[in-house]
Image (cartoon, rainbow, N blue to C red; front, side, top):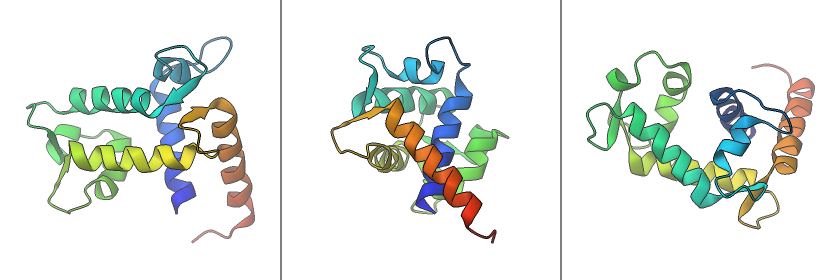
Length: 134
């Protein structure tokens, strides 16, 4: 389950920005200091901006009305809404973001590299082929 969630996070990030020469644009967009890695603070900043764009009434939480029909938000709404109050608070959203970051930072150095993401997606793809559906 965790691998599926992680893979979905990587796919969601990858689909948010078109690719550019020399590496994926989504990675470059998150790598604010152009270090070739993504830190937790860089990930947090990008996630906060995404949340802020979706938070139409600026109350610090997202309702099902605010997310509308956005496929990724709808698909993962229940996972983000940890207290099941029908809203995703910024705290719930950031807690899940931190959890995902920890999963992606496989060498625990506080930074996520393209190699780590590649290895995770490769591992997920391999395990998906070897595990029966359902």
